[in-house]
Length: 184
Image (cartoon, rainbow, N blue to C red; front, side, top):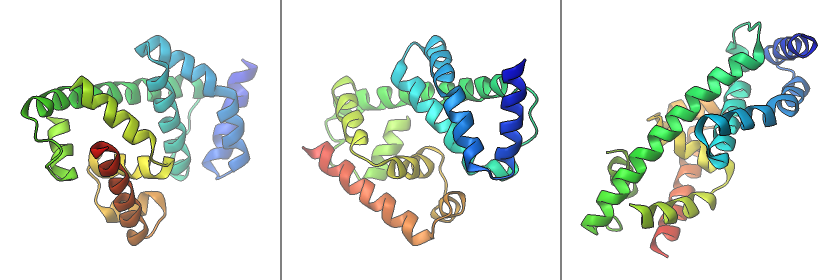
């Protein structure tokens, strides 16, 4: 009961823009949420990725967050939804990479075409995972927003509090890294 009240108070402070409260809630609930995610999907990496996305989203949208009575239960539900989206995306990636590997032409297409094919192979999956690990957190975030959430550069800039040019340049640099890594 004591933790529930503390989480509720931290949540209210986060809604008001208190960064310290955000980091306190993060420290308090990060590992319990990762462990919960592991029980849901049986993959520590995916659980960590989803938990990171949950907390990133909370801070980015802190001004529009609703009141929540049971913060941990709310975050578990939010995490489950993120996990389902990630698992569905990974299934689509695996299917598309398998098909692209069979055709042998995935290296010739533009990145945008590749992403479309990814959304519609085990060797290429490994290469793609390694290539994505070369990106910075911000590059991964913007790539996700652009190609998986389908946002425009204007929407990305607005959502991440960057200029449109910065969003474009960050995505362009990330694509260069991905192309280089996938051709290596």
